[in-house]
Image (tube, rainbow, N blue to C red; front, side):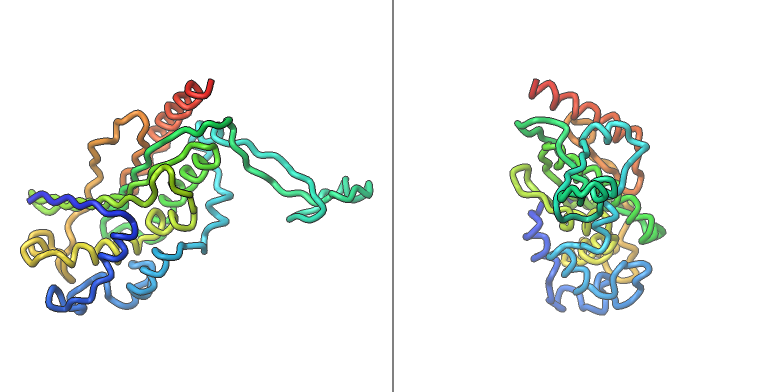
Length: 272
């Protein structure tokens, strides 16, 4: 049995918010179990759905400040400069003592390239097994969010696809969710929840799985106590030259650096 489904982000959120006990009672849905924040990442399904709809801002500043030193190509995507003004986040002591009015300073990240914009496809596999901690999943998602944020700052527009993939014996179950098209505006806080918060898989994706027919649920164990299968990190389009594929929690700096370098080289050729 091989199943593949495709959603837009709004379609996915609407689909997982279902209440039909004739399909599967709430008591049999692992997605709706209360508590266990140390595994689910949230206290309830409602809390997870709210973060998915409105964005996860709790760790926003941490991701903006993250520098991925293990990925040299990451540094090529942006430049930083200091802007001076009469109001800002910190004071430049030298300018202040000299009586210069615009003595406040702020750091500005700007694109290292000129318009026109480039393009990259980002595919994020949010699958993970039960032994992956909330903290480990977050650490993986932090790096992805930082890379994608910097791509957008460098005027490289991204199409972002989320996938959750499950195997059970000879059966495979895959869902693909378009979080953002290349022409859409980018909001880091909306990327962060599905990429860095384990509740995306353990509550929302589980709820999607639980809405299937009894035949599918039984085949994959999509019910409380059924195990929900084993995560799968294979993706057929991973070798595409303009696709960044993040496969599960196995973040490979070497592979990401090589692909980023290729994307940047293509973009520079395009604007030269």
